[in-house]
Length: 394
Image 1 (cartoon, rainbow, N blue to C red):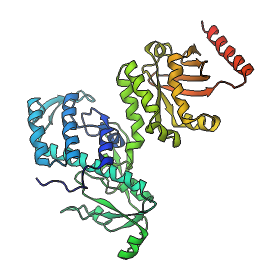
Image 2: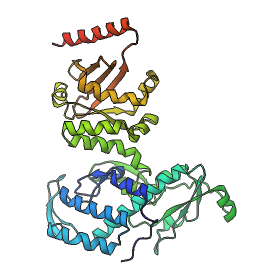
Image 3: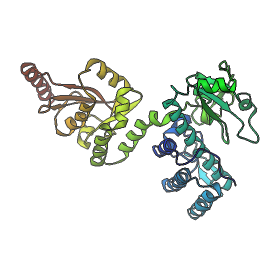
Image 4: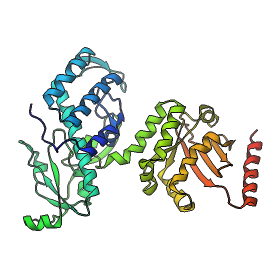
């Protein structure tokens, strides 16, 4: 089979998007749903992590090296056959507990895995570059002429020019269908003038009601978009904190704490600090502390809402000071504040961190981080107040 015609390799953003993904086990393609694909690598019915790793490694190599599908298949198929993930087999659906005769590996499935993962990685990488250069190239043209049999809905948009920030792209920037070869072309105002092009009106696209029978979720899906692809572009940076958190939850406390210190002092947290979105890992509790507040996780999360509150209420705290959250957890005096909250007093460096577990114990959030008062009198009084709280909980 011919090699997919994509952009020159290696595409740094595409590789970065693919490699930030974690693993998601799913029996059915609807189990790992829509935007979850931006955060996790999955293959329906690949229920063993070692098989999922083998497939992911082959996709990664194809993305980095420009491997043809023929070589991709030649490498991967014998491994999957050897591990028994090939042909049809009876499997239990973990959702319904039914035994179903399902398709595991096949040439057709490998082609879908190869095409979909490479194309989505390239499109996400391209979108990141589009956002970085939209001041110079503020327009996008829809190009639907990359397929021998283009979809009629997509063909109707061929040649259409819209601003980069037009809401149409949030729902329809390619890839939006399995096997879709559409793309967008960046353009400047000078490009439009030279080609005699004009900016189009935003298309009014009808929607279709779709029910995910695995979850019961009902959505309105725009025409021309497969339900599996109904999510906006730009998921690498948005989902990176989520994947970091899941990876920290999966390893032991000392390793997680060591990894977290590098993350909080790095670029990812700096982006979250500058533009809070979603949730970011900010600390790691020792097992004993997690048990004290009924937590089933050791990772302390920082929500975008709390980050924004911190910026508004404590603008004096610099980005670099948030590294003291973990230091307070590790070296500070631990004070239990009720059944679900802990206060950490790092007196020597002058910081107070408060963390609280959710009612279910499935998550722990940092709710406050502040410096002690610079006034010695007020500082001493604050420390005495906190220590009295500790005495009251004994």
